[in-house]
Image (cartoon, rainbow, N blue to C red; front, side):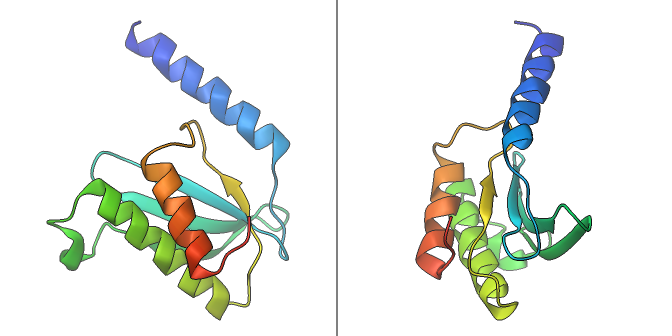
Length: 118
């Protein structure tokens, strides 16, 4: 497969996932973005188009030597702490175009053990 078809498939998969889920103030969408070196997680209110809570590993100097799996676990724990501090305990999980496996699953498990309910 060439790059154009891979990108097109990712766009279609993401659109299919997003057509089924939506976040609101009481139950925001937990959006996950994982690049090659960083993890970004945010709680989004789709009705008001606002980000309620966000966590990323971009400027965390303590995570520079960590593996991506450890960064994903750290992000899940931190988003759970921040969400509970903002009095949010129930979320809708948005994996984007990624399969619920590996780093995405580790992030979700860490968020669950931190106190979030999916």
